[in-house]
Image (cartoon, rainbow, N blue to C red; front, top):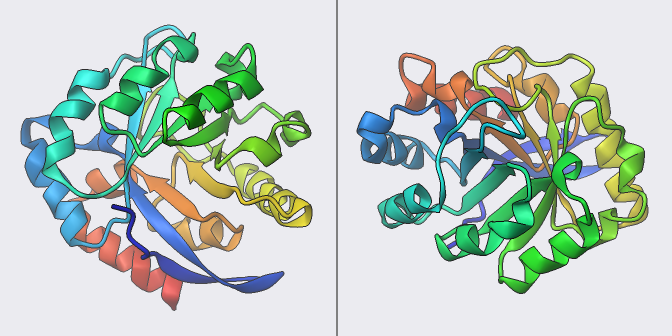
Length: 235
C-alpha cells in the first residue's frame, strides 16, 4: 500500500514537491528488526529501502529474497529493493515474489538494461536504475523514458555509514533537470551519506525520495531524528 506522504520542499523550477524519506534497513539492528521497522514507520517513514549485496558487484554481503519475504508481514510500507548484484536478471523474479514493490538494478551490472527494465515491469513492480558516483548521466539518453525510478548513488555502493560525496548534489540537480526537461514520469531517488547536517541541501537538489541509513539508525533516537529531518525540510 503506497502512502502519499513526504516532506514538502520548494523547487526552483516548479511547485513544491513532496520528498519521501526511505529508511535503509542496511543500518538497522537485525536482532530487533521488527521493533526497528515499527519505530520508523510510526515516525512517518514513507517506504523502506532494502539493500541486497552479493559480495561480487560490491564487497559486502547482506540478504536474499527469504529475508525480504520474512519481514514483509511486519509492515505495510512499500519495499524499495536495491539490487547491488551481478546478473540481476537471474534474481529479479525472486525478489518480486518476496514482496518488493520496486526493484532497482545498477546500470553497471546490467548487460542489457532495456531488456532488464522490461523484465522487472512484467513482474508487476516498479523498475529502477541506479548510477554509481563515477557513472555520468549521459548513459541515460536512451533508457530514461522506460524507467519508473532513477537512483543516484551519493556514495560508492557496498557499505553503510560512508560520507556523502559533495559533487553528488550537482549530479542530483542535473538529473532532476533532465527528467523534467524530457517530461519523463520518473521518480528521482538519492542514496548514501545523507544526515541531519546535509539533508536540506540534498532535498533542495530535487529528489522525490531520500534514502537514509546510518543517518537515521546510527543516531540515538531514530524516530526523533526522522521527525527532525521533516521539520528541517519544511522550515
